[in-house]
Image: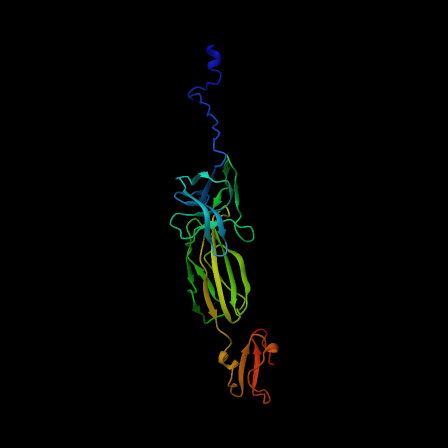
Length: 272
């Protein structure tokens, strides 16, 4: 019988012992779940994982049944003794302030935990939120309408994407996640008067978002000679240029019998 015992033998390599298949046995009224949290395509150690029965996506609050666990050194986590049902899955990296969850348009994309089963949850890749914006400073007033946006280089980043939008007096997207290989970008088209917000995301060589910044805001001044106080009574002095967003829709609050003023649109520049 000796040849039968050695048929899988490879010189210098021990014959492997088959790993038995273990089927979890759970009570019909309980269940479990298992998954992995990753950052920069590697398992995130010490990350928090939470199952939330009732998640309010507007206020981002959790109520009802909640289950919490943390990941091991390879990013794996496991829930046990979970009451079957639908849950929002939230994760948070160690030393990060906020929770992340997957969303389908709005709200949280829930996962279903079935009775008597171990549910395998898809890998959750989470970015950090410590990418630093440098210039323009937050809440700054600029003296140019073609600013250069600058941020700090992020470790392991291969490239970045930049988003810039006008937030007041109207909303308008200026840069819609434009890829930048360096750490700055200059706005080439002059910006109109108003308030703007911008943020940056960092990506690794695999195209995975690994970090993002918070929003910074700045204000672009109006044309020379503009007077925001000229919209209300008393009427402006003769010869004053009143700059408004839409000169054709602008109605002054003073008598217009004597045309002592002119309304100019910011874009385009036209007299009313």
